[in-house]
Image (cartoon, rainbow, N blue to C red; front, side):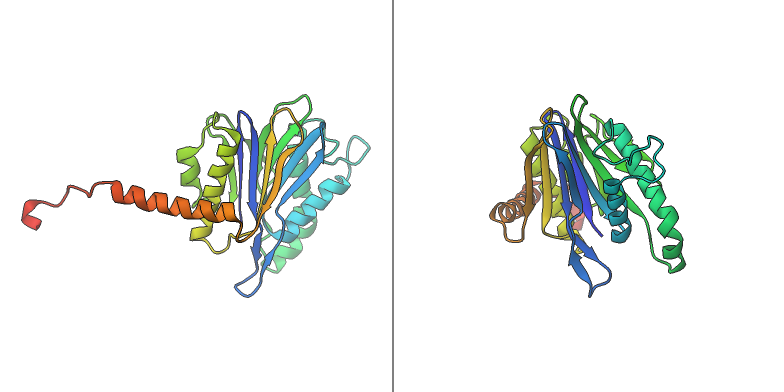
Length: 250
């Protein structure tokens, strides 16, 4: 299992992904799930993956080398996509291509072959955008009303984003909120774990403001986890007890 989230706010984009993969309790590994394609000043595109690791790696390799049978004549990659929308379409086509070529053999062995992606970034001259691409290759786009998208084991981190995220939040406040969401997920699901890969991109720059790996024992993240736990305990303690018990039940 994995957890990845993308946060799109007025000032820019934040993407966070864990790195834990497992094929059973005795086969836990670390693999990068957040991949960045960039030409500074021209475009920066980030893809975060959840699901079958072999399929997601095949999809990414296809997007690097170029989609087969490209109608334009030259290989279609993320780096030569003319727009973010066209790039999202190429991710969808790559998923369908890999499912068609590798899916039957995997299904014959009863192996789950589904993958999903978060895809965000900016191409010069375009607005910044964030998409979630489903296992079938179709996709949705992040909106101002709900300025985040998640894939993987998202249910534990979603309440934090629901309560705290809004489009006008400051960019690094959004990063902090995303890290709290990630911590909440890690607390409740051992299938999600450190290290975490983090990308922050400011709108209009087409380059990374921050591209960082949060390792186990990093002081800031350790402090964030401790402070968030303490804040929750304090809030719980400060809420009055329910007034439902009657005098006769005392």
